[in-house]
Image (cartoon, rainbow, N blue to C red; front, side):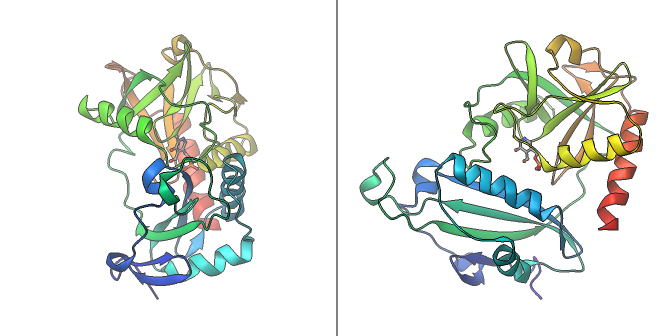
Length: 282
Ligand SMILES: Cc1ncc(COP(=O)(O)O)c(C=O)c1O
């Protein structure tokens, strides 16, 4: 059984210690950020919503024209040896278009993708229960945010700017409406309706987002996928950011103004409890 301590990783067909995992400096992931990735939680050895993660991976690969034909069973076979069934972990899986001879931007004729996977413990996110501060920022990313691309420079700069302002996340907006967080999806409760921006190329179709929508609908919450203007967001009684590693995190202060009374709201408590139950029930 491989856990975090011995740091076994998967690279192109082999399992080896992280310190021995090496790729070419001509790898297009390194040179161009020409690759895609997934982050898949594993609760006590069970991969969470694996089919959804693989569907999104396949979609990301198709959109960047990266061909790799592994089916569900093959991915399970590759990833299972990395898991420890006594811990909550997440798999980081990255696929790049392989090496770029002469650093040519054009695709190589017969690319050999680089496939890398590693596993880390999920550490409870500090502040998840109390809530966090966030700030709004102009969304400076490209136009294919529905691709889970390793090309994350804009996200990195936005998140860093937020952290330097004492915030846990940057909430992004374009042309007056909000899209998502720098590394998360966004939910708002406005007039007792749980709202999240609809799925377009401007957001990543988050798996946590999908699970929350399903749980909320099943449990009688009023739910809507629609455009949220920046002005409307400022009237929200609850704001959450969601992702596989942080799960559901209430934002209790936005742009230095308290959301509600600066404490997590009742809808968060309800949906978070349902989410935790659902996670453990699988
Ligand atoms: C930009 C962005 N949006 C949304 C998400 C949430 O996606 P998921 O719930 O599948 O982790 C992430 C996760 O890292 C992200 O980077």
